Amino acid sequence: MNDATVHNVIIIGSGPAGLTAALYTGRANLKPIVFEGLQPGGQLTITTEVENYPGFEHGIMGPELMDIMRKQAQRFGADCRFNIVEGVDFSASPFKVFVQGKEHLAKSVIIATGASAKLLGLPSETEYMGFGVSACATCDGFFFKDQRIIVIGGGDTAMEEASYLTKFGKEVTIVHRRDEFRASKIMLDRAKNNPKIKLLTNTVMEEVLGINENGKRTVTGARMKNVVTGESYIHEAEGIFLGIGHKPNTDIFKGQIDLESTGYIKTSKVNTYTNVTGVFACGDAQDHVYRQAITAAGSGCMAAIDAERYLESLHG
Image (tube, rainbow, N blue to C red; front, side, top):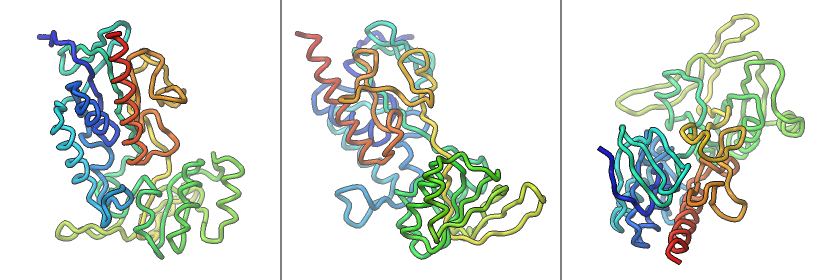
């Protein structure tokens, strides 16, 4: 059975962007529906301690922060549902959002589906994610002061992450599977000229090594393999950063709104409007530059205000 109610706003995604949009649209009495998606709370739910979110002087655990944000949005009337959106139809208003075979209608839609870090797919990588393995240097670099760090990747992302991590780690080793890098010359030269950075080519990481006792996990290094010689060996390190990029969670919007070639949603330079009037995008689904919780939350606020003003314009 379809839901015949035409909602003021449906928010797709529940990270800092989605829940901030829910808070603002809730306070505007728009009664937002939030479909939380595959990872309720977004990427912060796989983060341990968050120390760079304003207002939490001594830091806060990622899942706890998202739980607080959800409850705050709910206090103002946001209807948060643990459902995954399977498809959308933005060809006409009211817009259609499909969830578990059911059609939901909305006058406006805010997309906040975020992005996912590209991973190697190793079970050990997942086991130690947030406990020595990270995909965000600006989020977690601070925790690796005077420690040995590995960065996986060969593009600009890896070079940027490695250069940033030299502010904290005592040595940073970039591990790349080929002998040539995809990174731009300026980024590669910057890494090569940094005395703290070492380049390890023709090498892949086979396994993250660590100690997992009584629920306490600590990375001790990685098992590496030289793809030319076939030799495997242990590389000791306390931190492993994946610098192979991010993929925006926007597949369901292909053919519905304009996307960049990389999959990020195209929005106006001055607001969160997409090319479909009444559909807005915020957070990491449209931001491939900053990718921080605080910038995602800020753009969620912008999307909510844009949606509120758009709905007001419908009523003259």
